[in-house]
Image 1 (cartoon, rainbow over the protein chains, first blue to last red):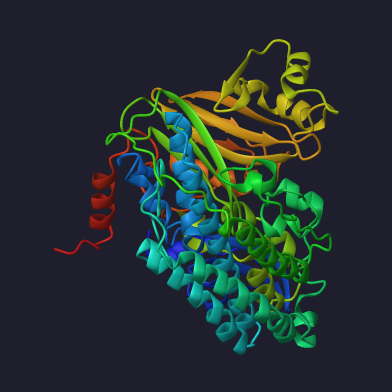
Image 2 (cartoon, rainbow over the protein chains, first blue to last red; image 1 turned 120 degrees about the vertical axis):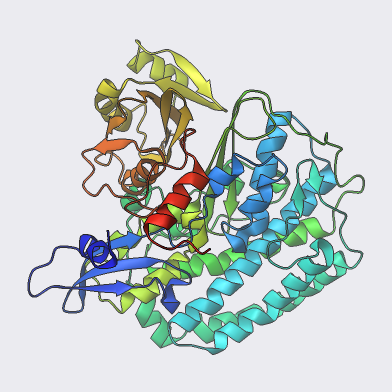
Length: 377
Length: 159
């Protein structure tokens, strides 16, 4: 098939007064390589088809030829803004198979890192949401605090984004001596500054008129489309894995699950903004109570899981990540499946944008907070 | 309080044996009775599985397992439904009419395993190119060979 035939076969059949427009794969508002084909009637979106695979790396296939310790590193490259939480899910599923108990200290450190990751991810989302709607300043305000988090990561983990700090049995090394002081300083500064987030965007009339009542997702649709994370919670579904199936240290902290019922872009925006405050609550409860002791239990050099199936879910910054692992008793997974939150949340794009204007699509995609490598894997 | 899902399943599907998959209860349904079972699973007041959390497959040559991970947001219980297919006949009815999420999930399974979902309105390769040879997550798939052939036939191979 040559290129013209290829394009021809992908074009949605259209009548004379409707026309097709391609958004992406190189479009700034998709935050990656998402290709959408829109059928337009004037400015109204009549049909929408996503085309994926531009960043498909076959992580599930590659994992089948890597050992249990090796494949964890690939998962950092799925949702790179929740890299630590992805690693955590993989470590938890391996520990489940080995029936290893993780030291208390490692549990708390992992949870702290996961919440810092969530904060950093939501801050980047908040900045880029402003950018998508034409407000440039929020980006710099968001990066002010995000930079502090990344510096904390760098000191302890040696890396800023794809940290690979989680290993089966605990964490790779102990926290940096400055960790506690710097996290406290970060929380103090962020609490002082978070009102600026509201002043810059939340209360802005232009931002409100571009998000309120736009991109409505009903509760029924959110359930049928298997949405999770802030997208589902903004439509009134209680689905926080940290509450429902606590893992690591989430059973010992108290925090609120943020739920809104409006189901529009503004609701999703508010849910994420409130979640940042809840993440700070969790960090504050844990930072003074990091147990002493080992940060990792010794695990054999070659991991072999008993024959069977294993499953673990975690709450990433974007929703529920499920790891399905089938073991045949060898030192490599027989089959591994990542149920990634962005893949199912992508399905919500169509009901949200049908009937709306093409200009709203940017606001809707910003509120969905899609990470394309997490969809393609 | 809703009754445990195991008891409800035993009552509603007395002919099936209840097994487990990871920490979830699991049932095995034949391809032919899949749609009628899905009807019961979604509508029965004791079950109400309204969410398809995940749809995937496992290649256990010569048979393939298709797994449906279901969840009920009203009762909070979960279930794995397993359907076995023979390698020679990889066809299964689509469940899009029960769960809209299956629209994307089925495309992924088709792309990676070559399982055809009859009744799916837009079955296409999702991640791989349209003219890609073979299905990557099958155990018989030879990755480097297929990639080499693809690059050669498209004159993309760099010497």
